[in-house]
Figure 1 (spheres, rainbow, N blue to C red):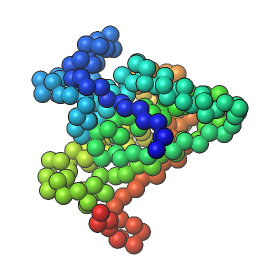
Figure 2: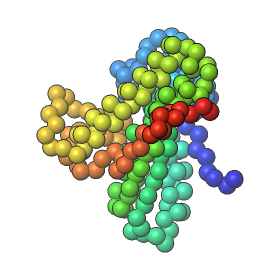
Figure 3: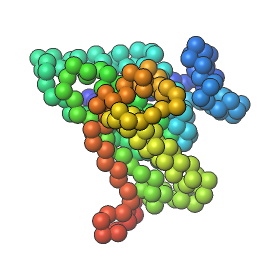
Length: 212
């Protein structure tokens, strides 16, 4: 199709990422179970948001985002000062999108800091997948994981948006996110994570549910 694709995963174990980024003390925010540490990133996020976050961190530390930056530079040639509109489309049900949708938006904010940029998000909620995917619907544990991912993702987005848009939020401690957000620097910046966010559920306004 000619559409550039930038994979976020490498064929290595989570333990390898810990070793690669030991200076970042990842053990403070990640599970320490042997099964998690021996898991392969190439298998996907496995409904674990933290795996996706690690993958995106690696993309920023390696040359993946640099390649993306080159693509953006090519797109902007001759269009300096143009208004940039970006749409991020993601599920918040599994682990992949819900684990990096905030980081992606913040990276783009940082990248386009001299341009007029509007970031919109379209996010699919868990009931879409529960209604249409039998394997998810038939496992209560899997359903709960999907709801938890969406709940946690939206709570994080809400918190960072409040911090960015208000000077009245009192924080007990500093909130930082992989070099992309720092509450001591970005509080009351006036720049939200997303300018607009649309959350899509499995029912329309008439109560008609998606079947597929």
